[in-house]
Image 1 (tube, rainbow, N blue to C red):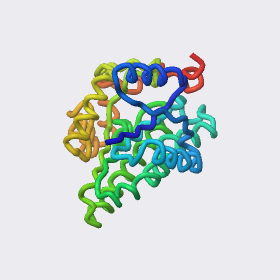
Image 2: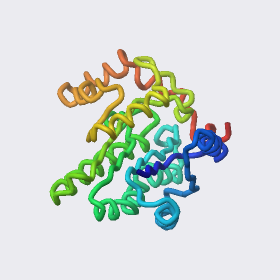
Image 3: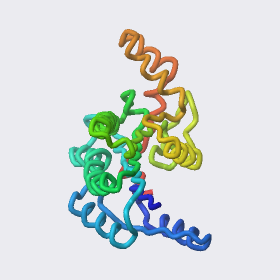
Image 4: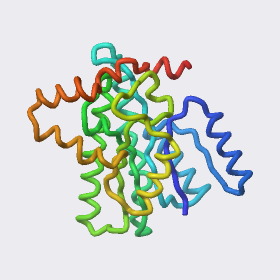
Length: 246
């Protein structure tokens, strides 16, 4: 079984260290540098993977960036870049491998969304929008696969709270702590094993966040601002440029 995951790298040396460690433990890890926003580059490297590694059984779409700017301060190119990396790239990666999965009659695609795709967030007018878009892509793809009887092709949308990877550097959550990467990784593995369709982390979020649709908008805002203090926790979020330069 071969697993392919897309990740965002600010330093390639980090993944090389992981590859070397796994090699010492007797595992084999193939690494490819791909611009997921470049359709041709994705397709080219997809063919390399198929030729050098073999058919991909599990595809994890995890690449993502956050600009960390308020609406008017966010440069046009960063808005475009965020959409290209966070959502449009999913079309290219899924197209690159779904056809082969259908021919073999098995496969699993997991896309990493976010709780910000269920609730708009301060300094995330672009990021939240891409995560909302992923929900639409995910649900529509599930519908198509089910309608055509492809029950052995599993699709999972994984929506976590903020993860302590440095991506949301400067953010100071007040209602709950950031998630740790190891815990998130374990939950993703469990989701794949269980063939879950929609997962939130923490699990309670899937029941709490939709409540905003059942109460007046002004009351929802008052709860978010005064009790949860969501906007306040995001005001220190560093911009993408600052994180990349760190």
